[in-house]
Length: 373
Image (tube, rainbow, N blue to C red; front, side, top):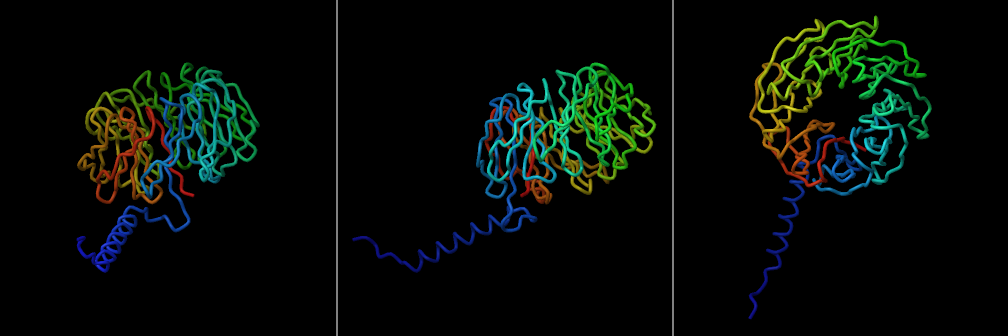
């Protein structure tokens, strides 16, 4: 005979399991996420030409979107419910509707674009096409190209000043930083900088730009008001990521071959300190108050948190094979990094400084954006 089933006990066990599942879900639900809102990560996979979409509440991949060859430069649009990126080999910019996961825009911009940037109000997008020596302005509402300008040789990217009035373009082969009027893309200045400039960050008051130069192991400081070079700051190796504090007071530069981080005092335009972090520190991100900086180490497979007030290294977090770009969700609850060799998205709980899970995405992920909607 079958044993008599205690239906009351079974019902109680079901209730306990449901309650536990609810508690777990609430524990990992970001604090800013009210009912009706979604929080998704978008990961560009250069190896298979797709963008993976990951639900950051359920921690599962929910979509794979074919976007074309070598997608990169993912950016969440500041005002529209979209995520933009570029196809470097395809020569176009694309936009994904966050809610539906559909590709809604594909706009030719010229050969070899690497990144996209937006005006502060989100009305325009700016893209430099490295292979065709051009700068393009796009109306985000219509998806139409509204301006084109000629640049120097191999423009690496376009960066909009915080006030939205100028667009800065570093030309890698000319070793110049060109300054364009954002309203009509008229060239208003050109400044000679250190060899092979690539990345650009701009102080919040629009006064100075810092430009990394991979050909000379330097960072150039450029006065944007007088449009002159202030200084070329020598580093201990080739600069990788530029991480600017929100108040603009310090700039953190990762140096993979020197195994560390160099700190630039932006007010004095001088290097104030160097830190050894690990094997090959690559990319990074920081909390909104800049109290913590997280740096991914591609060679060591980990992310290192740094308390910036004391310059103290916290325990590294192992995340996977060849971690690269990092990003914090808007609440600061979750830290994400993509693992290029293992094709995974690592999700870290900031409060406990611990890895929650690894989510398979696509082949050779190299770009990451987070969208709250």
